[in-house]
Length: 424
Picture 1 (tube, rainbow, N blue to C red):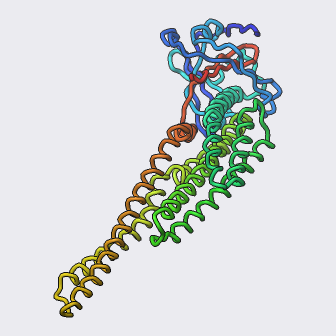
Picture 2: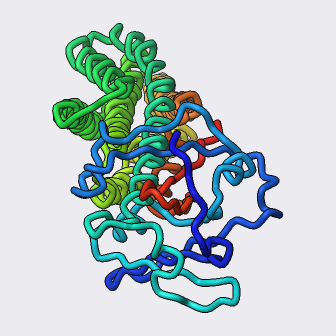
Picture 3: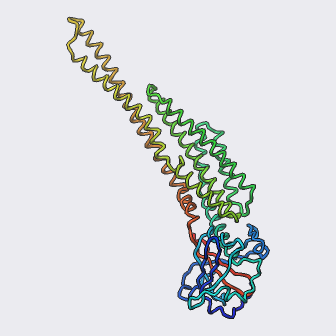
């Protein structure tokens, strides 16, 4: 590790300010001794000087120290003071456009342009904010790797669920979902990723979306073809088919959301795409809010409501018919003698059939309520075991998540930067 030298007036520097005419100022304040107690650890970021000069900080150009250090340990290696700012990757990336000027504020609070940096020897081609942006890029890559690891740990559970569904003889589509799941996991597990992987992710997402749309259409057809005239066993089978269709739509839609998460995490690892990543996060937020996966309870209730409305209408009619038959049975018979018995017998048979019709519809209503309860329970357990909701919520907040970054001014033009280690 290179040796840092003390600047002549480093004790007077209390604040370093990077100013950009487009996005404003970023202020880094000196870390005082009373703030060195924290146990949080940081790692140093290393970027080649050629990358800083060209402004092209690629995935391969970034390196991170193996060992983490506390603030107190870093401060011991900072003869010119340790400075910190809290910001987010996108804000900081805007300072690295080559038009950033540097000022400092002394202990009295006075601004002195370039004071304290006169002896640093900054080259005109090296923007001091670039290394800070690179540090944020490293944090973005670390976060991306963290989320990818979380995602792969959860989606590997999908295979067991999908294998169970193959018994319903939808082998081809379920096989495509399993293949997409495995392909996405392989990409998420890779240490280095590139544009080829991004293209593959989009392909897997397309497959998941196509299967989702197929089963969403199948569900609409099953709703419209619901038939109360079937026998009990057939009604049970139809309800099972409806729940199965919802399950496949749910799994396919979930995999599509996972593909979006993996694309975001992969781009974070590649680096240099913060604003594009923000756009993808915005799309994910909207897609998630509108998704079949997120709204499975209301979707199931909507499907069953249509079926239950038909049953309720049918039950109302059958009960009305039964009441009329009952009244007819108690009315005075129109015939006399043995004809009375025959007429009463016919009315009794009709009344009995009417009662059977009522009971049949009531039985259907019971089956429908049971089917709705079952699918809601199964999907709730499914979501709880996946924990994808939690990961999506965290990723959606990334553009607004501010993080602390550390900076040490040096005389040898190395601009040492440290980033926090993500606490597991």
